[in-house]
Structures are given as structure tokens and as C-alpha cells.
Length: 508
Image 1 (cartoon, helix red, strand yellow):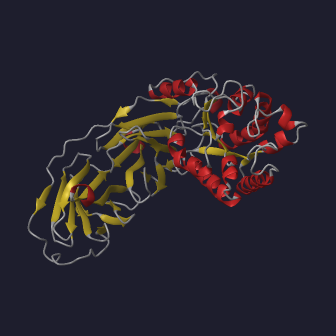
Image 2 (cartoon, helix red, strand yellow; image 1 turned 135 degrees about the horizontal axis):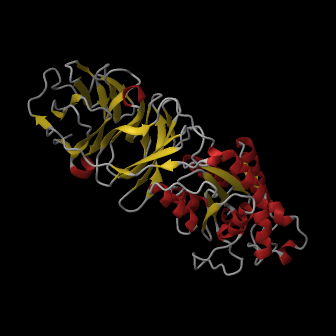
Image 3 (cartoon, helix red, strand yellow; image 1 turned 60 degrees about the horizontal axis):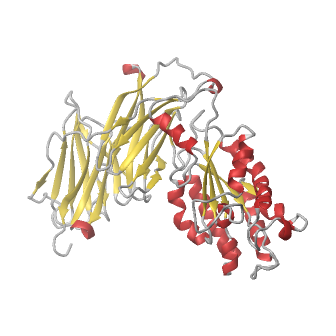
């Protein structure tokens, strides 16, 4: 985020360090203005498309108007001159990834598409996709129709297509219950509009941008009323937020790749107490997490997670009853499973104070570190009886069949008291599945097998544990009969990424 107002950075830094903001201070709310040269403010005083760090237009004016009404915003102006909606789709995800709390996404695109002869329906489809992506990042969208163009603009100088696009977007916003800013009529209905309010046939001047900001004000207020206060009150599930343990705990994940690309994990619920996140595609699960009520045992809620990814990520867990926040950091290059049985010390009779007089309390950031494996995973050269020659896994209650049903995955477990059994399998995607040991609602282990032959000539095995009981994970290549065992001794939480698991043989 190139031009994020410094107040947001300070607010986030305070939370990471465990500093509770002043109870009387305004909470800074993200406001992303996303669009083309109109959003960048071209035509306003001092704005130059060749110098992208110069920006003005409606966004800073809207920020001032919201501030006068008690809403402090951190504005990120993401206007790019000359951009079409197709080009906007190619860059929107990295922009949205910087928004780590509920806020607004102001979308004003399409005028360059109209100049290029792109159909209204195509523009409409691209805008709807941008709205969908914004929802995945906990952002409420405010749609805006394009501003009118002057008689000397060439294509669409009578504004027929510009008007039609605005009305189509208004209809889409109304049908979905979203806010709509009518920038077209805010300018077009003024006398001598192109003589008095425009810097050129396409771009408003300073006075024109005052009117565009006015058009955004009430829709922005309406949208903020819908998103509510950031990280306060009961947990509400979203595409990027899990609500676990009867909805008491809100969990989100932020990830960062080695090249600096950032994003927010997409959430999928599994049981009342557990769920998972994927980062890049929905078939590739990266992280499983569960929150258990252990107050009867030690007076705490417990947080467990197991990773199938070694990218850098931060898990944020918020107790909606008390406002307490706890974060877990996984450094890049680390596979980590964590069992935190001291996560939230909350006696059963604690009642959350009124939120108007309190601020969320952030506990210290916990950094995950890889736990030593008690035994080195070993490959057994002898082929398994009954498996050799079978080119396909047979799925049953104890067996996962992964990676086009080539690999059979099973797990056996043993408790310190001597109780033992077989893990019950729960397939999730073509490459990924889970096991529970004791009860179906309590996921203990997640496993995925990926085809990495194009990368290093091997199939890869990843697993992440939500259990520290002793278990043996057996992965069998049903095409060759080769198998590999992964051993976990009691008391250990372990996540493993074995990118050398099964070397591909000639012909497969």
C-alpha cells in the first residue's frame, strides 16, 4: 500500500506490541479508493499522472468530511491513470491484502473501457468481481458510476454509454444491498458543468472533485454503519474470518511471501471448534486451527494449530467476550504446529465490560519455532503386502486417498495410558484430508500429498498436527507399493514438509 496514511500504521504497530489504544481515541478505519485517473485526482491542483505519488481528488476530501462526523479514516488512494477494469482486476488483490480490518473499498472504474469500446456488460462483470474480492478481505464496497464526459471527448460524447453503465451499477448495488455513489448526476446536473467544473473533457477540476466527494459522503456513511466497529462485539464469520467455540473466538490469518506479496487467508469452517485457511487456491489447504474450552482443566481456553505451509504468516485470535487478542507468528521457512493450553485465561463467570468504555487488549506476539522431531521419518523399501500392483487407493473409514487416488494415507495412535486406535479419515480436497482420533468434532491431524515432479522429481508430503499424542502416519504409493512412515512421540506437536518423500520412477 503505497500511500497509506500513517495513522493506520501506528494503530497496527500498537496492537502488535500489546499497547491498548487510548479508550477515548478514534479508531482509524481503512478506506481504499480504487480506480483510474478520476480516483487519482487528475485535473485537481498539483496532480500529475506521470508522478504517481501526487494524488488528490475526491478521496482526501471524503476523508475530511468523514472525520468531521467522527469517523477517522486511513485513506489509501489507489488510482491509476488510463486503467481499464480488466487491468484493475490484475492488480487489486495485492492492494486489498494490506487491509487488515473492516473498512471500505470505493470502486470507480469503467470510463477508459467506454473509450475503448468495451461493452457495459463486460465492465459490469469486472466490477462485480472486484466487489467479490473485496468481500474476501473484510471490506464493504461502495460502487460509483463514471463521471460524465464533455462534448469534445470523442467516443461517447453524448454520455449514453456512461449513463447506462452508471445505471447498471446502481441496479447491481441495490440488488446486493450495497451503497452507490452517483457521481454522474452530481456533476451532470450542474449548470455549465463542463465550463465550470472540468479541467479537460474527462477530468473534473478542484470544484468538480468537491461535488464528487459530496456524492460519496452519504453512501460511505451508510456503508460504515453496515460494517460496524472493527474487531468488537460477537464474531461474525466472513470469507476470511473463522468463528470458533460457539462463535466466541474470531480467527484471521495474514500471510507474506518471500517476494513481499501479502494476502489474507480464506477461511473454511470444519466443526464448531475447528476450521482451516487456504492462501492461494481453495484446493490447497495451508493451516488448520481449533480452539477448545479447557477451563474445566486449567482455567484457560486452548489454541491449537497445524501448518501445511512454511510461508510467513500471522494468526490473530480475538476473544469476543473479553476483547483480548493473541497473535501467533510463523517465520518464513518454518513448519510449525502449536498447542497453547495457556492461550486465554478466562474464568467461566467473566463477563465482557461494555465496549464503549474499553479497548481490545493485545497480548504479546508469540513466535512459532519448529519442534524437533523425535524420530526421523523413514522409507521402507519392501513393498506392502496386498498393495503391490494396485494402481489406485481404496478409500475407507481409516484411509485417505490423495493425489488422484494414488496415495493411501493412514494413521495409528496411542495415548500415554496405553489406549490405541486408528485415525478416522475425513477427505477434504483431492490432495488433502484430515483425521480425528477420539471424536469427530476434534480434528487431530491434516495431511496433503502434492505432485512436485515438475519442480524436483518427487511427490511431496505435508502434515500438520493439532495433537501431541503418539502416532504413526503411513503414506503408501499404491502405484509402486513404496511407503513412508512418519513417527510422532507423545508430547510433541509437529508439522512436516517433506519435499523428497517419493522420488518419481521412470514412467511415473
